Length: 185
Image (cartoon, rainbow, N blue to C red; front, side):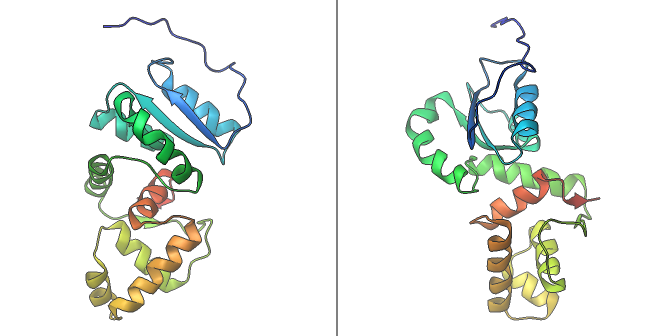
């Protein structure tokens, strides 16, 4: 096991950038401090973490800290060039299984979550109802039945929500809501 000395990351000068790629091995065990420092100084910045391997626990912790991308060293060579523009445009680059288990863990840990009323996006009542259902991992058809509207109308509201939150996929919207701590217990 590598016993790298701890590095004081609180005094590292940060460049102006939209995307920061953090080598988790190089700053271990201070990866979380570095990510927090980056996002404190650059709230609009996006962080991609590259590490040796991604365990479920470490992946979930990095996502909760605000990481928008997770890659292993072996994936980085092929996938980093594709991940950078996606993350820069507001998306996430996270393995599907990690994203799925992350969302599932949040949903099972705390059953009744609702978006706080002071959300940065101004949502209509119906958009809020659709978003609450999305956060419960409900399909469009189930949302339509629950809200007594057509499935096409649900798709319209989902599209509006994606646009308002600046993401491309509903999984990104769910992850973004939980990352920004806009979900109240």
